[in-house]
Amino acid sequence: MAASLAIGVSMLSSGAMAQAKKDKAPEKGAAPQADAQNQVYWVKVCPKVAAVGKNKEGKEEKKEINFCLTQHERIDSNTGMPIITAAVRQVEGEDKQFFAVMVPLGVLLPPGMLSVVYTKDEWEKLQKNEKIDEAKVKPVRLAYGFCHSAGCEADVEITPEFLAQLKAGAALEIRAMTPNGPVGFAIPLQGFDTTYAGQPVDMQKFQDARRDLMQQIAQRQQQYLQEMKKQNEELQKMQGMDAIKGGKDAPPAAKEKAAPKK
Image (cartoon, rainbow, N blue to C red):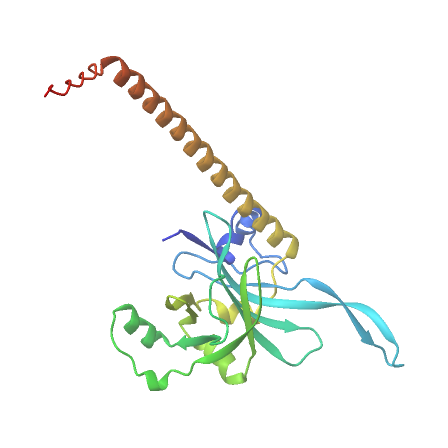
């Protein structure tokens, strides 16, 4: 199984965000700090996006609005590709909120995907392979919208009930269907409530931290390729020496006996 990294406060607390730990009072917009016993697996980002709206006079005008995502993103630490991404999407000026999920390519689109929130008690039982009351579980169905090179995305409008479940839950499971059968992605909900209600992280620091992480992954890939190339060259040398040695030491071929004359 490929190693993975969860991009949340734990990632932002390193590199560009490390200095924040030394400050007595966190600056406005800084990510809430996480410790080993209170790990936060979610991060809130609010980039500015261009939008076209109408002013009081009914004329169109361009303006920038906040496009906020309270998200969890897990990536493959070997390739840098996302394994699972889940986010609550809020757009400034809109009352509706959406829950969006992206899973890897290879899923069957017609069935859609399911999102299931487990309480702390239910999640602890599942971790111990104990049965839970499935009648109490209320899955939410998401319809796929589109696919691209990074994966397939689906979303659904968030109801107050579903948002309350996310805030109070212990874990979230995303279920998708593939040609080989169902697959599930477990996402911890620890830290979601405070992250959702809190201030967004500084976008520049978030982008810098993410860029640094991707550079580390790229360097790891390069080191791996160089090591594989070196091993391959050594193997070819060994095979070449064995072939030469085999040619020198090989006994002469036995002469075929002439067929007896009749």
